[in-house]
Image (cartoon, rainbow, N blue to C red; front, side, top):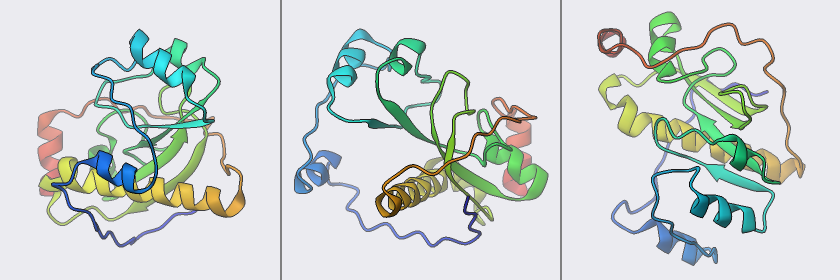
Length: 186
């Protein structure tokens, strides 16, 4: 398990260009499903038919994959916004800032236990100086970095390297606005 303290982020994308164009340039086909429910029958049918072993899942807050989807013959790779197994749950980087002035991201395979799947990669680093950009900029960058490093390791090793976080002591739920404000000011 590799820990890094100061990765460098460089975004080399045109944020006005549709994401689908990047996929087309890489020869990857896409399908759009209009649904806010990851567990809808339409999403289930589409994902079940995919010819792949791993699906990268990045959903909106509260979008938890249910048992039926987890039961298809595929793994769901997700990057959690927190350093696992230390910080499972929601808005964990704010708790991490308050406790140890660090933030993290962890690539995992999802299972029925929230944030307790096998960890493939994790990164811990100092929070950004302007913490009010945490949710909409920095969080996405650190998650993208963890996903990139996970895929880089898989490409190099031709297998998934992970450990099982069987002893999670704490679980963090949505942070109270006052605590979030204190973390931003820290």
